[in-house]
Image 1 (cartoon, one colour):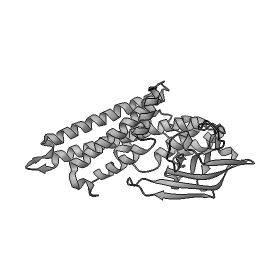
Image 2 (tube, helix red, strand yellow):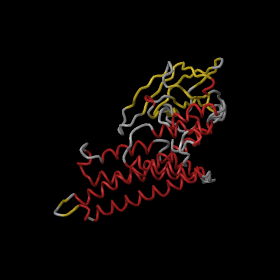
Image 3 (cartoon, one colour):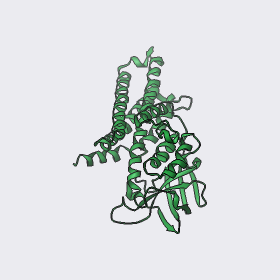
Image 4 (cartoon, one colour):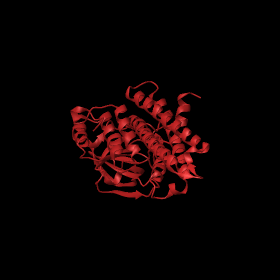
Length: 325
């Protein structure tokens, strides 16, 4: 409940505070559905929920009694509005959902999902998208846990004639994309924050290893080739931290360049953290790929968070658009 308002049982803290916490989560690869619940579940309700919905969901999230996530991406794997093809049709006071969502974080253990579905088609793909608060145990929902190299918990979720009461529409019908877009921005900042901590810990572990591992009668850290890799890594780590906190602050303060800063941060952190963990693996040598050493966990988890909520190329394109190139 860190960023949930105090009136709903939360701490009422800000995005920069969340970034600090998530950096520590990344440092120790903390498992569990915290990011999906707070960022992808509670935050959309904070943005667009009715007072009744806020009272129903937010106190339970703040108390740790409710697990949530967002079901957005589909087999097309697009992060943009035209990727939302799942359909929802109205029948009386209910909505019926049909379609498939892919790469849904922790869906199999959630109580509710925020589901983006298309309720109308038009020339503008950002119009006609509606958000629904869907009970994860509703008849017609099937979960398939995906096996990933990061050993994280992502699911394919199939909806077959899933009925959702009208009171569980989040925000206005057909106007859900702005809420999704804002949530995506916070999710990207969350991913960057996690990558900062992950990269920092990977660097710390590798630095200690370079000081302790002896080859040719001397610590491997005394060789210039290793020193330069470590120098590159620490530059990348601090670069990730600086741009992530600038992005978090910009989003928090609704700065005019907030979207630009978030995309810059995600593009940079995705690639910089990859370089850090690659150096870590290289310096550890073959032993780094054994499960006796935890450095391989950071290598695998980095790839997961690098791709979540848009990889470097996706966000680089958004930066270019903002520059009106």
